[in-house]
Image (cartoon, rainbow, N blue to C red; front, side, top):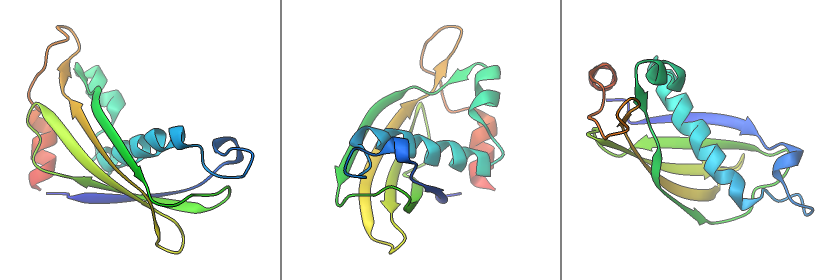
Length: 133
């Protein structure tokens, strides 16, 4: 099972406050970047999932801020799959800076939803198969 994935990016000016510190609300987007790139590394995209009738709303999101991140730093999001998905999928996140210092820890739980019925559904088999390779 693909347990984790690393995604790196440079902090843009518009993501910071007047002190050059990353605004706390941007971390949800960084976690999303980690999740989407984790899926992409498996050969799956949100776009393809939505075309097949699967939606993945976030039902829980937490962040623990350890230190500040700054404009122009390169950050790395480590996205960790907690366990084999069922009707939910859960990730832990570690965001580190270039010195490998932990900036933020996070957790997200998403549900699998049938886009036609808007009802919960089990994780699609095609994704489960990718996790067992």
